[in-house]
Length: 124
Image (cartoon, rainbow, N blue to C red; front, side, top):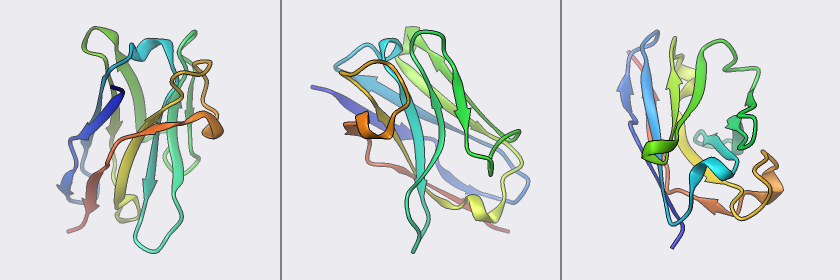
């Protein structure tokens, strides 16, 4: 059974850091693309970052470039999102998704499996 479980969310002050984890089960994570998405209250879901399988290419939304870093630990079957210099506008529920069983890329149309999300609140 394919499952993704996010963790690591919480309340942090502006300028602070958090590391989100996306633990995968039921498939081998390093063969597939893994993306992070977020949805703030009253807003549309947006893509935050993604990592491909073959060459581990990474992609970032302009709003997080230089502050967030995506990485993968194949031994733990887990993808991380390190978030630094957090801003109030980063407040959202963060979700991870995978393109399993597709080609290991970062195409939204292929993101068939999603986690339930973890809440990040950036506030003083």
